[in-house]
Image (cartoon, rainbow, N blue to C red; front, side, top):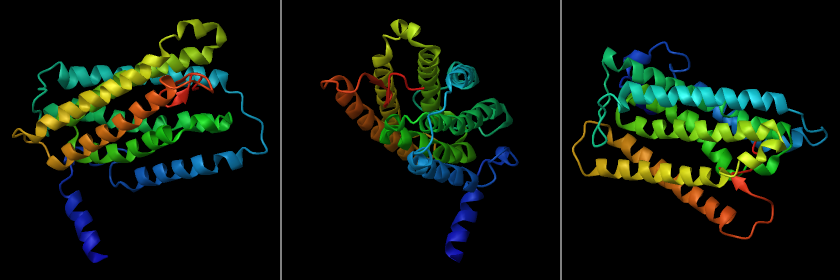
Amino acid sequence: MAGLVKMYNDLMEKADPRVEGWFMMSTPWPSLIICLAYFAFVKMGPTLMADRQPFELKKVLIVYNFCMVLLSTYCFVEFLLAGWLNGYSLRCQPVDYSEGGLRMLKVCWMFYFSKFIELFDTVFFVMRKKFNQASFLHVFHHGIMPFSWWFGVKFVGGGFGTFHSMLNSFIHLVMYTYYGMAALGPQYQKYLWWKKYMTSMQITQFILVTVHSIQLLFIDCDYPTLFVYWILAYAVIFLVMFADFYRNAYKKPKTNGAVANGLKAKAN
């Protein structure tokens, strides 16, 4: 036990001092506890709702989804202005640990925190008794992102790793736009013909992140190799999972209606 404590303390000594005192950044335990509670809620959700009627959440979902559009748009624009349209290199981009890199660090934290808000996607599924929409892909993706990104913000808040978060923010602003329009009612379904392409966009995202990560294995770049491997593994795992989902959803005969992003068309 003493050895583990020493390893933990040694690791924390390498943390970015700029996040000292930031909300939820002192230790990883709050993030881990919330993620574990999320998995427990998903597991217990059908039992909790067994004797209850589905909640009517139309107005809540409209507000929630369009607020998420605004948040995702903010993150996407900030990632661009803080770095990717302001001198960041696609080949090698170290983390700027100076005060000059603080704007990028702040949007990294906002992106991290947004992943906790996105857990409400699943909460709303459970409350509406749409249990089949909380697929393994959906739950796994939502459940590991917050805890993973705690380490990103704590140690490498900026640089190379923000390429993924920039793309992800763009994907999510598109995704929540779709969900918000779907929540408005059936009269808007005719405008949602592009739902199939959301999964294609997800797959493209992970291909780009995979290629972007692999090239760092062959060049000398001042970015922690451990995080390169972590991002690469993340991208490959979800590339395979989303590709498999796409094949099952759109390349095989449909039996339960169209789906998008691991969820049915009326995801929210």
